[in-house]
Length: 240
Image (cartoon, rainbow, N blue to C red):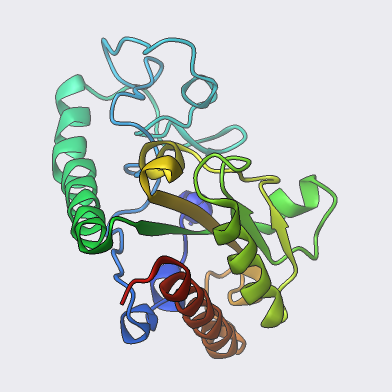
């Protein structure tokens, strides 16, 4: 059960209405404890992978949170000992590569239709992360790399749409975004990326990992917010 601490539990189900709204939806099929899709492919941890070479100074890798994580929390190790480079490459080949190949294809398809595309990267955050910053009642954190990953109006529209649905929203603290924001957020090229982190306590029991009675209502509120974001984006960008 401890391995699930880093999992974005049921986020795919929370946003399952996205296709009905007219948005593409790509869901990860493997947990972050196995392969972290929000890390670069070469963020390999020498403390976990035999013979791996550190790709420069990287605090994420040093802390045990590389593309193949060593921990799921402070002093919470995933396994004893190391894995081989062959085992690491097998995970990346079968999990990381197809996910990002598909994501790039989806983004490129939409970009080709109108010269603009917006990626909403959807995650969940544990209560402990909010308690640590002294904001236990925060509901959603929008991460845009402090304005570098998307045009300012996109963050503003998303914030307003979520607040209109009763969510308490903050930007970039404690999660500003990682690899996906850095890789796919190129606002000057018309490629925008915004990370949305939702507090798990809103829809699940963090002890049992069961969905609560509030799940359906939270899903409906998120669907209305997504529809609002899409409507503004269509008008602003002149897309269909």
